[in-house]
Image 1 (cartoon, rainbow, N blue to C red):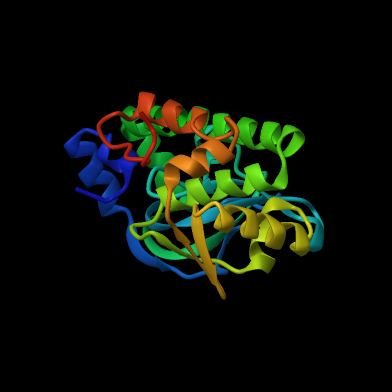
Image 2: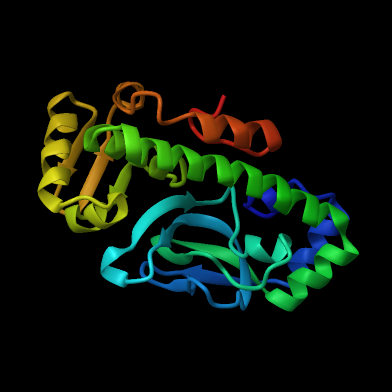
Amino acid sequence: MADNILLNALPPADRQSVLASCQHVLLRPGDVLCEQGQPNEHVVFVESGFLSVMTGEVEREQVEIGLVGREGMTGLSLALGASASPFRIIVQAEGAGYRMTASAFTEACAAAPSLLSVALRYSLAFTTQLADTCRANARQTVESRLARWLLMAHDRVSTDELCITHDTLSLMLGVRRPGVTVSLHVLEGEHMIKATRGRIRILDREKLAEAAKGSYGQSERELHRFFPAGSEARAAA
């Protein structure tokens, strides 16, 4: 079995066929897996770690709109019949994945309809995450958005400790660094997290979910609905 929810949702024969076309690769923080507006050269099924999905034409104005972990993949535009990626995708937390070329993925979808079906179901779950991000950015405070982000990141790692700086969180949330610092202090004061230099330890997910003010959970439940056998987001159900 591959440690990726989408691959594990495939029938065994189809999964083995797809894996035979994949290369196992390391995902290092800062690696750019695809550029906005550029053709997808590869598809990556994430095994561990997580990716940030970014939008914005000017780098200093880019903002994160989604996260991808072992529940997902890059290159969804290929499954939807387009070659170019509408987003920039970078590695945020170190991990590994299964990479295949765009042409191999397209051929695999034609040979194994189950692969295309899985990719399309995931695209709907991911679209729900994008919608939740838009709503949170428009309606929620920085504190609530930060709580949501920490929960989503925590879902995608195997430890309670996240390696993340205030500057990176500022970029991810699209807010000024002082706003992130103040919000971290609030969450820490309520004993939800423990923040040290470059690291945040999750202490109380239940309180973080309350602090997220309803912005966390919908897309996680949607993912669990589509992939109940493999979806293990810590609060998916």
